[in-house]
Structure formats: C-alpha cells, structure tokens
Image (cartoon, rainbow, N blue to C red; front, side, top):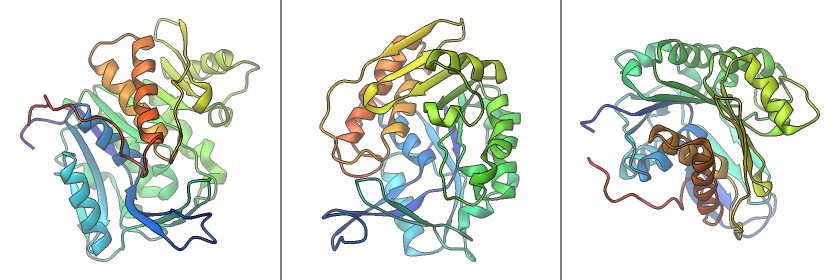
Amino acid sequence: MSAAPEVIAVGETMLSLVALDGPLEEATSFHATHGGAESNTCVALARLGRNAAWVSRVGADPMGGRILAALAREGVDLSWVTTDPDRPTGLMLRDTVGTVRYYRDGSAASAISPDDLQGVPVEDAGAVFATGITPLLGRDPGRAVRALFRRARGRRVLDLNLRRGLRGSDRASALIGPLLRSSDLAFGGVDEFRAFEQAQTTEGLARAISRLGPAEVVVKAGRAGASALDPDGRWHQVAPAPVQDVDPVGTGDAFDAGYLHARLAGAEVPEALAEGARCGAAVAATMGDADGVTRNESRQK
C-alpha cells in the first residue's frame, strides 16, 4: 500500500473455526475464518476507507498464509507482519453461544517484541490501536505495545478486551494498567473497567477511569447500547438499532472501528457512538469475526 497508515494496530490473529450446528462439544460442522481483535478492527477500518496497518507475527504454515491472504484481500496493510519459521499460528475454536477455546501458547504472535516496530511509521499515524489481550501473551508482546504507545503522536487507543483464561489474566490489572494510564481513548465494558476502578453508576465509572489517564472513555454494553465521556467531560449515550444476532463475536471490534473512524474524520462523540453501533450491529448480523461492515468504494488505494 502506498499511503502511510492512518491507524496502526499490534496484536495476534488466529485461525478461527466456528461451530455451525450446535455447541462446541457437539458440533460436526465448522466455518473457517480468522479472529483477532486488532486485525478485526483493521478490517472494519479498511472497509470504512481508512488505511490501516496490522503489525504482528504468523507461522510459516497454511493457517498463517490463509490469514495473510484474507487480510490482504480486505486491503489491510501487512508491510510489517513477520512470518515466523519456528512458531505456529494460533488457533481458536468457538461456537456462537459463548464457548471459546484458545490454542496460542508458544504461537508466533507470542514472540512479538519491540523489534517488530522497527521501521513502522508509528509517529506519522493518526491513531495507534491495541487491546488488553496482547500484554497477556507474554513479556515481549507487552513491551511491544508499551513501545507503540510511547512512540505515538496521534491518538493512543486501547480496548481492554479482558480475556479470562489467558495466561496472565490473573494479573490483568498490573499488565494492562500502564497502557490504560497512557491511553487517550479507552474502550471497555462495565465489568472490564471495574477491574481498575469502582463506582455506583456507569457514568461515575467512566469518570473514575478518566482520572487514571484517558480523556475519552467509551463504555460498551452490547444490546443495551453504549455511552461515552468526551474529552470536555460531557456524558453521551446511544441505544443500538434492533438486530438479529447471527454471530456476536467481533461486534465490539467493529464498534471500535466505526467509532474511531468517525472521530478521525472530526465527528463529535454522539455521531461516533452511532457509527460504532451501526458497524457493530452489521457484524453481529453475519457469520465470522470481521464480516458485515459495508465497504466504502470511494477509498483511495
């Protein structure tokens, strides 16, 4: 891709096998796709017309090749993805009712380090994006995300995306807290934010989180909608449009992309909330982690 990335994201993407005909333990039919919060967000941003770059590692295996081919077709900039000859691509098995199994210990992405950011034009990006998943992959991935945020001159965007069961999840506050404190825009659910602060109301919780560092705090509540504290201290809420959920996984990633896309375009927070809700609903109505967002055909290559 010739244009410099407007958004740069760092994180892991796995081959994702989604059970189609029942819960994971009973299913006999699976849909093969890919899943990773950061690349999902990049796909949605690319479909919305943004130049989005994904920095990561995949294995030198068919799973890694499949992921790279799929993301390339979406227009995601893969200039800084490394193919690791010694470690495999991660695998995720899941169904559409909430069961997820990860096979990512020792994966290629678990070896992401600050060295993977060499030559990446972080300082030129309008935003950098990371999630709380990456620091849980290991010491070096955590160092890479902290380096990403230190170098950024644009918006530093963090989605907490807490994942119970990942190695390090019992130390999530310690591992993710430094990123939260250095972020400009933070996404999360009420329970995720409560891992860092306590308050009786959602608005009070967002204000408590803002005092830690991020001037802009977005609280996602699924079917209950979303709300946000803007940098001027004003509180906003939006209700989602009714949608028939087909596969809710990836909905939050698409929401992040829609919201960030709108804010980069100069939209106010209420408009960004509405765009995020629209993109999230589109993904929830389709099978797979990153499908559903309508492509902006006016995008300049």
